[in-house]
Amino acid sequence: MRVLIAGGGTGGHVIPALAIARELRDAYGAEVRFVGTARGLETRLVPEAGFPLELIRVGQLKNVSLMTRVRTLFDLPLGVGRCVGLLRGFRPDVVVGVGGYASGPAMMAAILLRVPTLAFEPNAVPGLANRLVGRWVDAAAVNFDETRRYFRGARVTGTPVRAEFFSIAPRGAGEAKRLLVFGASQGARVFNELIPRIAERVLERFPGLQIVHQTGGRHGESTRATYERLGVVSERIRVTPYLDDMPEQFGAADLILCRSGASTMAELAAAGRAAVLVPFPQAADDHQRKNADVFVAAGAAEMIVEAELNEERLLAALVDLLGDDARRMEMGQRALALAHPGAVVEIGSMVAELGSGR
Picture 1 (cartoon, rainbow, N blue to C red):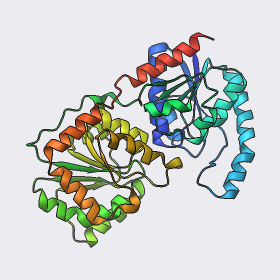
Picture 2: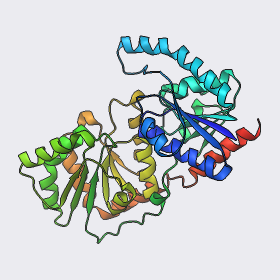
Picture 3: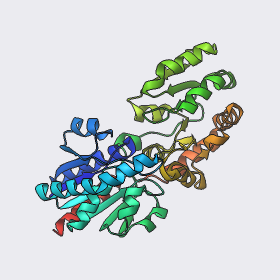
Picture 4: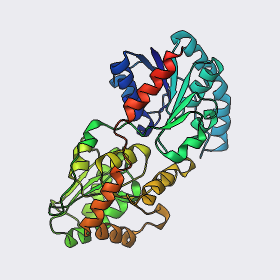
C-alpha cells in the first residue's frame, strides 16, 4: 500500500499526521510520503521522522491581506497541477488530508484523479481546506461528534496522542501542587505577560505550589526579564522556552493553563487533567474557542476568552481550582471520558480499508 499524506503547517496538523504515518508503516508495511509547504513545521519534523517530503507552493486565504489572498488564489491551480503530477508519479492507493496549506490542493488533485481520500479533522470546526473537500472525500476521521456533519463517511476516531499520555496516573489530593503554563510551541504572549504579575500571590496562597512556565522559543529571555523586573524570584518557579517531556509535565501537573488547539485538547483528555483554557483569538474560524466549548460543556475545563482576561480574572480562576481538589479531580475524570486511546489504530484501519479497494 502506498499512502500520500498532505497538509501541515502547525504541530496540531503535523504531529497527528506523523502518528498516522508510523501506524501505516508499522502495522501495514505501507510506503508513506508527505506533501507540505516550505513554511510549515513539516519541513523539519517529517524528514526527522524518516519520511520523504515533497513541497508545493500555496498560501493562506483566511485572516490575511487582500494581496495575500490574490496571490494564494493564483497559486492554487498551480498547486493542484503540481499535486496531480506527484500523484501520477507516486501512484498512491490513498491520499490522507490532515488540514493546513498543502491539504486542499492535494485532496483536490486526488478527487480529480479518483484516488480514494480520507480527511482527518482534529478540530470541532474544520479548517478551510477540509471544508472545501468535505462533501467529496470517501471517508473522514474526526475528533468530535459535531464535526461529522461536514464530511461524507465520517467516523469519530479521536486525535492520535502519544501512548505515554494514556499511562498518566491521577493526582492525589494530598500531593504538593503544580501549575503547568504553556502556549503550544510558540508560547502565548498573554500568559507571558500575566503570569509574572500574579505568580507571587498564587504562591502565597499555596505554600507547596510549583509553577512551570513554558514561554515559547522567542520569548524566554523577555519573560524571565519580566519576572526579574517585577521582583518575582523563587525556586518554586521554573521558566523555560521549551518543554520536551510533555507527558511527564502533564503527569506532574494538578492544573494546566493553556491554549485549546486540537493536539493540546487530545493530550488533556488522554492525561485526564483539569485545565483553564484561553483560546487563541486569531485561530482560523475561531476553532480554538469551539474546541474549548466542547470541554466546558462536558465539565472538563474552564474557559476564559482572551478579550476578558486580566490579572484578577486569571488569579481567581487559578486559585479557585487549585484550592478545590474534588472539583479538579472531577474535571480530570470528565476530560478522560473524552479521550480516544485507539485513535491511531482506527484511522490506520480506515486508510487500509480504502486502500484495499484499489
